Length: 277
Image 1 (cartoon, rainbow, N blue to C red):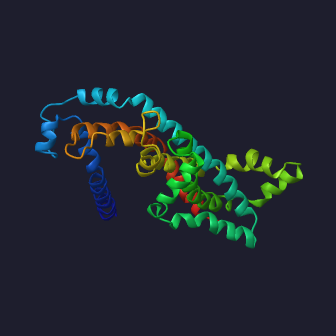
Image 2: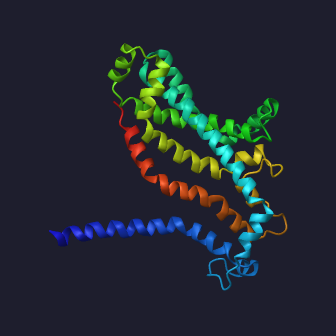
């Protein structure tokens, strides 16, 4: 029996490991080329470094003012995540608990934006953002992520809230709790796993986003993000590939660490939210 089951377990693991390495290969190349001199990167991008240039990191950290840009990324991500979690969890709770024609329409209205490509609205968004004073502003960029992140989060939260018994709400109301009090004191703590999933997925998206910051805050170091800073080494006639790779490693490394720490919550939350009562 063991002889029959052992290959059946090993072969899938080998295949999955191979696919994992295949998807990790671009990241590995990025790290390898971040510690090469410019000449080696141009000569052979795949080869291992003949000379390790740690100075690349020191130069890039100083040139792009990494501490300030890291703070910008943190503030934008924190503001975006805070709004997405707060508003989508409340909306998901109300839409799941109250089933009628209006809430069904409101639910569709909330999740339909997931089907709209960003490229089709980015010019209009830029015009509106300038009118409202949300462009060239860290708080303005963080607020704009609410609109793009809430649809998916509402979809996830509403599915998860459906698994929570309604009797919990009724017991709280009998004890004199208001709807707002019931949500924040009883329901929201029960949403920890799905909230962790939403946070993990949206942190990876917001932290590493390039196109929206390029449109909205591509100005001074006071508003730039880490991904935009990496783009400063790309020129029309000459690109400093070694510094570009170094800047990208510095930009994505914090989000990768965060994802590794949160990955178990992602699977747990998505599976739980997919089961609707």
